[in-house]
Length: 112
Image 1 (cartoon, rainbow, N blue to C red):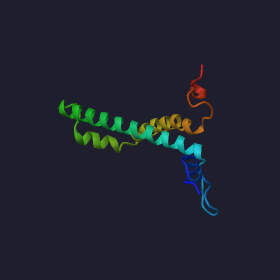
Image 2: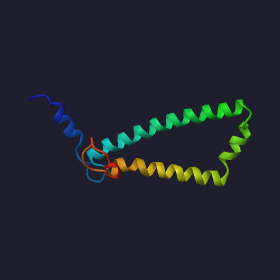
Image 3: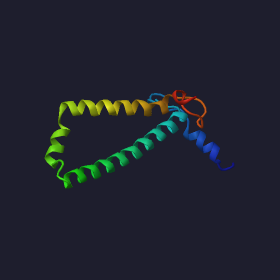
Image 4: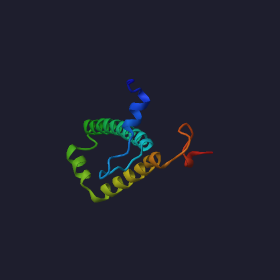
C-alpha cells in the first residue's frame, strides 16, 4: 500500500460534508472567501492606523478634542453616513465571491 500523495490528501480534504452537516461553500469558494478575508483584514489594518494617526494629529493641533471625537461616534447622522460608506465598500468586495471566470482577468464591471 502506497502512502497518499498531495493530490489524494487534497481530494480527501475537499470531500463533501457528511450527511446531516451543513455545507455552504464549495472548495473553489473557500479560496475566494480566504482572499476576501485577507483583503478586508489588510484594509482594516491600514484604515485603523490612518484613523489613529489623524485623530492624534487633530488633537495635538487643538482642532478637536477626544470628547468631540467620542461624541461624533454616537451621532446618528454620522453613523448613517458611515454605515452607507461601509455597505458600498462591502458590496464591491463581495464581487470577489460572485465573479467567475479567469482569475487573472478583470472583474466583469472592470472589463474594457
